[in-house]
Length: 318
Image 1 (cartoon, helix red, strand yellow):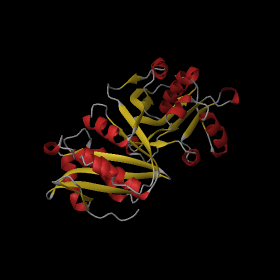
Image 2 (cartoon, helix red, strand yellow):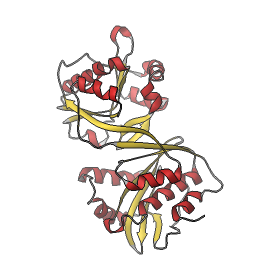
Image 3 (tube, rainbow, N blue to C red):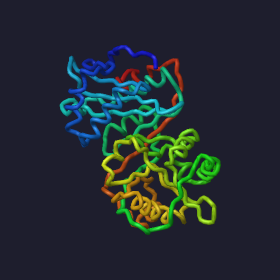
Image 4 (cartoon, rainbow, N blue to C red):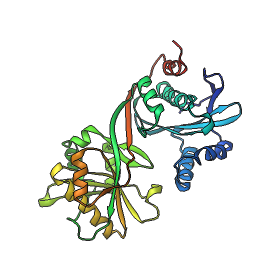
């Protein structure tokens, strides 16, 4: 990426600059009051500091770090915004909003494609930035899990590289995939199910299929083995699970069986909050973990000659 210089925003007391290793302790202190577990926080910050395909910035009030954000380039024309947290004594002062605008502005300066982010619907600033920056709420996801169960359902088969045309053609027929292609969970982000990624997942043995009579009727994609959430082995996490509506319960039961055969105690997946999908999972013995939702937002982004538009909006300028 192009190098980024320290930028002073139009907010009178706020400066945004690239994060340095010296900022890590301050960021950890801010995140300690959030719902991050220690393992997740450590892994997230390790990724932020070592992944060169993105930009990691901090907001400063004076010389004090009061917020942090990350712009990640997940793939060709695919971008992701993460705002980690704002210090408690600087919340409700527009810091998260300005970080969001700043990072979005950076994408408009250096790239194009689709940019996404996720949030809790309870976060008040989300409604503000969505209105200001033209994002669309594309899906609400919820967490489901179930005990692993030997013999609970049909067996899934591990698919291979030769199955790529069949998998991509089958996915293209499904309303869920059409509605939410950005729905494979990895490292607490959500990736688009592109042909290049499916190719890699098939080669890595992560793609499982239900093929009664030799016909593909369901797909379950295992989360990447290197994903921090796969460690500890107690729960097997699927990044994606899909089938035709009538077959979804069968594939969900098969996922429980795969987890048991893999020596895991539980199986987990995040799914779009659609009544028919949730009923199918519950019929297969899955239960919703809690009442929280994750909202996914996305918008197209283009290189713009007037790339400071969103910054002016954030500051209230005309």
